[in-house]
Image 1 (spheres, rainbow, N blue to C red):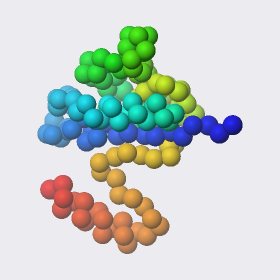
Image 2: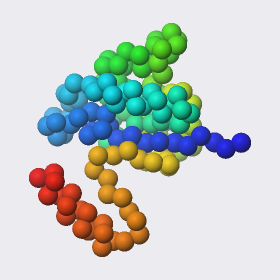
Image 3: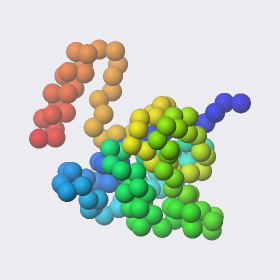
Length: 139
């Protein structure tokens, strides 16, 4: 039996709008309901979904549970959401179904959803061109 595919979702710029950059490290933007609906859909479709972040995972878990009350253990017990779990630091094989994981360590995934990614196709020349374009876009 094939294991479900994992999907990684970046926090800043994808889940959290990150309007003012890193700043003091706080999570300040209002939530975007479409983001959580999309993550819910991925989980319902059977993907193993986790948030990938440079932040401390506990901050992300607290923010998610506060902003989106249907995520978290209480909502999951009522059958209307999914629990949020911090993935243990050295658990590179984490594959909990019907749970939104959070980690600040890189785990393997079939896809990484990230606002700052440059897709690598085997050509470093294309990467360097894309990086120049990306820098202009973000300045």
